[in-house]
Amino acid sequence: MRKNPYDSLKIQISNISDLAEMGSRFSKAVSVDHLLSLILKQAMNAMDAEVCIIWLKDKAGNLIPHISFGLSSHIIQSVKLRLGVGLVKCIMKKDHPTNIYELSRDKRVPLKRLVRKEGLVSLLAEPLVVEDERIGVLMICTRSKRRFTVTDLKVFEAVAKQSALAIADIGLYDRMDRKVRQKVEEISMLFTMSRSITSSINSSVLLETILEKTRTLMKAKVCTLNLIDKSRSKLELAAGVGLGAAENKDFRVFEGELAKKVVKSGMPLIINEIATYTKNIPAFLKRKKIHSIAFVPLFSNRRHSGVLAAYMQDVRFFEKAEVELFGMVASLCSMAVDNAAMIDKVRKDYFNSIKTLAEIIDANDTYTRGHCDKVMKYSIEICKRLNLDQRDMNSIKTASMLHDIGKIGVDLSVIRKEGKLNDEDWAKIRRHPEIGARIVRQVGFLSDIVPIIKHHHSKFSGGGYPDPNRRGERIPIGARIIAVADAYDAMTSDRPYRKAMSHEEAVSELKRCSGTQFDPKVVDAFTLRKI
Picture 1: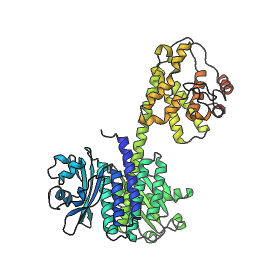
Picture 2: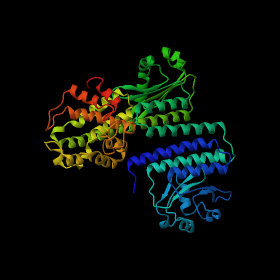
Picture 3: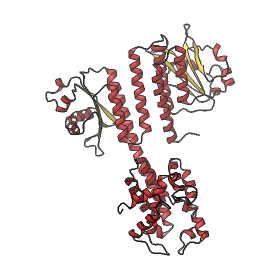
C-alpha cells in the first residue's frame, strides 16, 4: 500500500536528516572500508532497503563487490560483473538511477542464483561518477516489490553523488583535504536547511532559521529575504538576520531598487565592492562595514517570487560554484515559502471542516446552537490570559470546537429532551466524552486533542467522568480550560427547564466551585474581567 502524502513528507524529512548525518560523518572516516560502511548503512536507512552493495571497477575493468550489507550468503564474494553486458551495461550508460520492479522477470539480470537464494525482488542502481569517469555502481535491493517514488530517486542520486565524491577524494587515499571538507560542510548545511523546511510549522521562525544558516554558509554579516506580495506589485521584507530594528527601514530604501532589478532579470546580481558600484553608500552599510553584496532570485511555480540577499564584510570575488551554492539556498527558501502557503491553506480548509462538523453537532439541539463557537471564544481568551504557547492554543481551539462531538453517539431524544434529565438520561449523556475521544482518535492528525476531549468533564478534586480518579494537574490543561468555558456558556444560556443566569451569577458559581469542580487558576484567569 502506498503511503499518503503526510507519511511521504515524514519519510522525506527522515531521508534528508540521514543525508545530513552522512555528510558530517565523511569527515570522520579513517579508512576506505569504514567510509564505505557508513555510506551503505546510511543508504539503506534513507531508502528503507534490505540490501545494499557498492561495486567498484578493478584493473581488468570488471565490477567487483567491494562491500555489502544485508546478504545472508557468501556467493557475492566471488562474483565479477562484466561491464559491457546486459543490465550492467544499461546501468553504467545512464546518468540517472535504473529501477527494476521485478528482478525475476528481467532477462538482463545477472546472478540469478543469488537473486533467488536471497529473495531479492526490486532493484535500484546508479553509476558512481567522478569527473566523467564511471568508477563503480551503488545498488540497493528490496525483498518486496517496490516502485520507487520521485523523492526516493532524488535521495538515491544524492547518495550516489556523495559516495562517488567520497570514494574518489577520500577513500582511495584515506585523506580529506580542506576543499573537500568545505564541500561536505556546505552539503551538510544544505541538507540541514532542507530538514528544517519540513519539520517547522512556523513560517517566520523557519525563514529566520534558514537565513541564520545562510549567513553562516556564506560567511555573511547580514542576510535578508524579500517576497513579492499577493498583488505582485511590490516586494516586502519577509525575514532578516543581522539587522537592527531601526535599520529595517533603511534596508527597504536601499534594497528596493536592486531587488527589483534581480526580479526583472531573473539573474543573480553580485556586487564585489560596494564602493565601486555606488558613491552614495548608505550609512547602515558603513556601520556594518559591508563591502560585498550578493542577490539571487527566488522562483515559485516558474514565476519570480522574491529575492535572497547576503551582505559580506570582505571584498568578495565570487566563484561560479559559490553563486550556484547561493542559488541552491534560494531554492530552499522558495520551498519553505511554498510549504508555508500550503500548510496555511491546509489549516484553513481543516478548520473550516471542523467548524462545519461543530455546527452539525449544535444543530441537534436548538437550545445549544452556537455553543461550540462560544466555548471556543472563551477558551482562547483563557489561553491568552494564561500565556499558553501557540501550539497549545491551536490544540485547545480545535478541541473546544469538537468537545461535544461524542453527542453524535447519544440518543437524540435525550439531547432534545425539554424536561430535566433523569438518572438514565444522565448515564447516556456522560458517555459522550469517551465516544468523542474514540471518534477523534481515528483521525491521525487530531491525536493531540484526544485527552482534552476525553477529560473535559473531569473535576479538579476528582469525581468527574469518565474517570473519577483523574484530578488536579493530571487533567490536561486544555480540558480544564474547556470545562470552565463550557460551564459558563451552559449557565448563561436558556434551557427548557430554566432561564439563563446573568454573567454575575455564573461567575459567582464558578468561584464557588473553584478548587473542587474547576481549576482555580483557570477560574481566576476567566473571571479576571468580562470576556
